[in-house]
Length: 470
Image 1 (cartoon, helix red, strand yellow):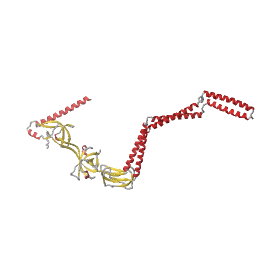
Image 2 (tube, rainbow, N blue to C red):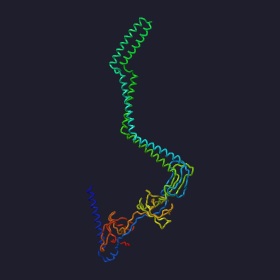
Image 3 (cartoon, one colour):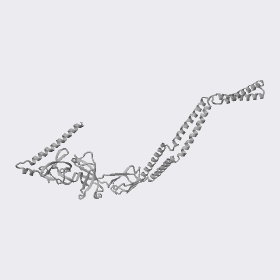
Image 4 (cartoon, rainbow, N blue to C red):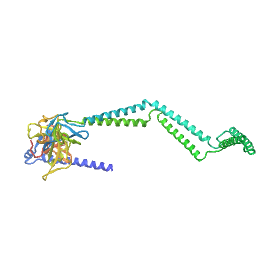
């Protein structure tokens, strides 16, 4: 594929060169062949010198000065107008007070509340770092207490299980005491049975029975196990102690090396949120006194003193930005783009030329009364113009949009150009009264002249065919 494209390019170049040679040969033959009227033939050949000058491409139209930068103004929050100092048509300067809001005291109180909240958030953020050692020590103490409670719960659970309630010596002692109590009980019972009416025998029998039952209960407890209710209670206390240890361990781990990143991030977020709320409250307070952001003229006021307002209620035009709405013929579509320069002459100020720049071009044609045109906006340059204060909204003007400008360029009449192929040009240069074809590069062109950017110098003579030029 690359080889084929290269061959095609080579062939195209050869064809262009061949065309140049043929055109040069034909012109040379036509201009130099001897005939009976050769003198007349040469006289018919017209020529001119390439000159140095300026070339400007422009599209002309009309325009009207409009309100290009309209500003809508209102209080920061809904409120009541307590003072109104302007009306439609008033001219104002930047910083002039236009209106005042009645709720300024409430807004000032809101600022103080937000400032206090910001102070608290800052204190909390600083305390995370300043109190880090104390927080870690408290967490460590809580972990130690939780471990101690777990140890107690574990011990209580263990010693209540069957086989763990007493040591072997304790069991032997309990068994011996049970046997001794059994013997005393048997003797007391026999004495009581022999003489049931004997008060001493009755008392001894009751005491011996009580001692026996106590020794039996002790021995049974040492050898027994918890019932279902007691076991469930022991299990629950042990599980709760373990959970408390886990919680205390996590809490200690999170603070033992200082504040956790999560806590720091949360504190920073709260601090930033408090700062933003304070900024908004301060802005609302500042906006309760409505001032002109720039010099301008009041266009409309939609509220009066005592009226409750929501949003903008004063509209003004910025006089620092002068904008023209312009219209060009649709045939000039290729002659206007955003960023192009423009020269403006107002009908009321014919001796002054104002300069500006195209800031907007409508993407579609403007249509009115069965006529179509290109609509665009031109912003006048405030630094490179006569006094803009002379201008008034609605003034009409003639506008030239500068599509291109060449300064001190080499210029030839367009009749001197020979287009060899699209975008490829040549001219015939007279060298010793003999026209010779020369390739040139062409820049700007209008209906009369073409800019030569390379291939020709000012002062050289070029032919224009049989067309006479000046």
